[in-house]
Amino acid sequence: MNTGKLVFAQVMTHLPLTTFRRCVARYDGEYKVKYFTCLDQHLCLAFAQLTYGESLRDIEVCLRSQAGKLYHMGFRSTVARDTLANANVVRDWCIQAGFAQSLIGIVRKLYIDEPFGVDLSNTVYALDATTIALCLSVFPWAPFRSTKTAVKMHTLLDLRGNIPSFIHISEGKWHEINIFDMLVPEAGAVYVMDRGYIDFEQLHRLHQAGSFYVIRAKSNLRFRRRYSMELDRAVGIICDQIGTLTSFYSTKD
Image (cartoon, rainbow, N blue to C red; front, side, top):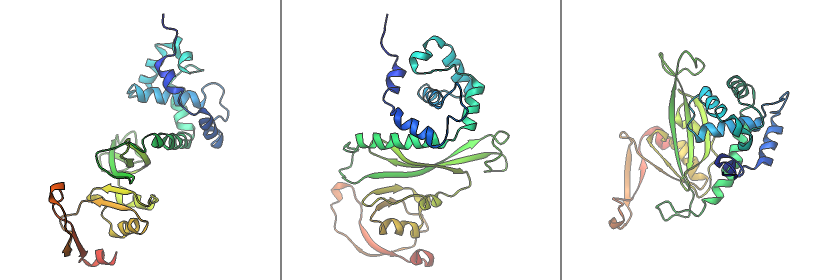
């Protein structure tokens, strides 16, 4: 008979619980809580993530089917669907967000020297957004189209380790360019984006901060070549050109 720790318990031992308790205290997460603590809530969410839980009922059924092992997994109270739903609604989401940011800071240091296919010492980020469709009758607070609702998740991904360093969730109608107002450019970092982020005023702000960016051009981009740089085509680069923007607003920005 195996007398060692369960796999889930072994994974959860790596959590910095002192930091988690500080996040709970900062946002008063344990106010009037008797049984189902913030740690129990976090363990439920972590279990759902690791086991691909798709609903509150799914989480409850999986955990309560092995009720005798909950204590050994780290839970100190039973898991009920209504209790978990109420905790997710009432408790401040900033507890989980603050704890996630602290974990990201720990994990990024572990991957700082990991190669990712390009010989660069700079930090390389991928910036993109994805639209998550929602049911109109369940989520009327997130208007997107006449027949459905949606939210948009903006993610800044550190390509060393594929770790998200910034996540923002907005309404589905919110344009991707607006995320630049929330980002603090990192000097020396390289930002890789698609053409949806073309805004020359914001891109110039990245340049002024000492950052670099790689972005695809739109088909209607008006660009005049001044001269071409010498390069070795064997490395896969077709051309390297220096030029200026010729449209009115692009030149102004």
